[in-house]
Length: 97
Image (tube, rainbow, N blue to C red):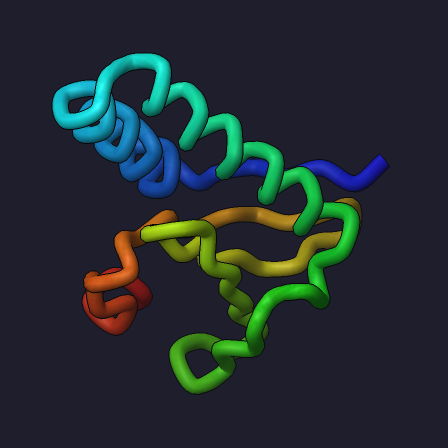
């Protein structure tokens, strides 16, 4: 069964998204937003080729947008590993080394 995992950096980014959304729009909206990101991650694990190729940033890197954020990930044998969850206005070059 395909699965997805987050790097520690991506987990920290999710927590920041959750905290920011709770502060500005409330807990219900924050939970809804995070649930949507989790659903997307599960769908990408099953269909990793849905993402946009970002080889210009890092070989094998893909991304997929969700509302105001972009998931950056790599395909793995049984799914994907999400390395970053960045706001659309963030420059991925600063985070991808």
